[in-house]
Image 1 (cartoon, one colour):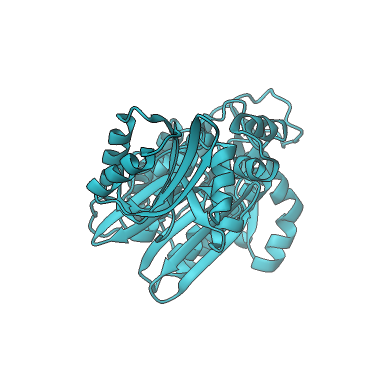
Image 2 (tube, one colour):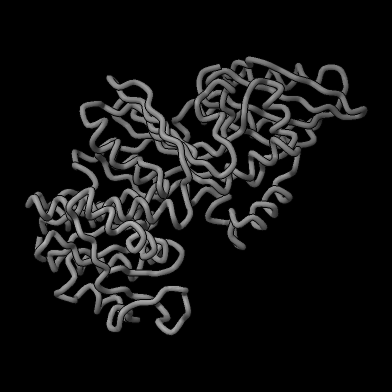
Length: 432
């Protein structure tokens, strides 16, 4: 390490919710970290957008600055911890740090999901560490288990509940019978959802996290825009009630797997059998489920967001960087590249599907509907029909079918004069 006495001097970029928690953690547990690990973590510089703003933290003179580039360029700083968020200027700042021979720790999921491969390559060439545990799942340990504990395995599948906001909303809809908007408002009141919830409820957050996990698990670059994405706005209390009646829970599922040399990566609502490990994950908890060819099924569960859990992962990465520097083992990055593999378009994926339709309630209607399924080669596994006088709700769960087949079925159903509406179509996890 550069400094004597086993000390790593840290330049922190950002001091909001996560950055502030990093500062408090280092001050609270710094002595214990040194005692247990022999590593001293010294916060040398902190860059913030508004140095004059009161944030309940007191810094020594010269530590706080409004110029992040100044922190990156400071020769007294050994490692950069980036918790500022956003793609730019974070990308430029981290590339500059790497070029200067500084290791990097980041909690920035959007940056890694979009430019991770560029950053991994730069760090490998420079022989510095790039650590990113906090970028997926906050305090939930996911990256290191994939890279180290499961390193001897070929990963077959990574599935998860990667967004605590949507999981809280769906839990409340199931428990209270609320519709989406009511559950969202409750999540916002409790601080689990932002005033603008788009990133969470439309699946952007989970898609970015899945892109990172897929890149690491399958050793091939997966960009956030490569992940197929649907959010939860269309999920209704009626969907959740019918799902429970059929033996399923509704979750926003993130799924990546390798099949026949191609990578499938998608985020969307899904019906999970009630005995599936992810079906029991409630409220704001996150979970990641990994299936390896030799290890079998492994799952981790925990708080996936928030300042303190994320700070815990950031500081754990800083400890690892310090240990590596002390041992002279630099250059550990987030993934080991292999040949890029093609991605499977959503049209080529296959799953059972739940459909909720409202139709005119008269003889012969279902026969016309069933004929369309049969003509498109989609087999029906179960049917629930509930009359409401002049109309009826029909719930159909299919056997496994190609997405392209189901899209043809839906297009043809829309042309039926007896169909009032297809209220929802939700994929089912697993075979039916």
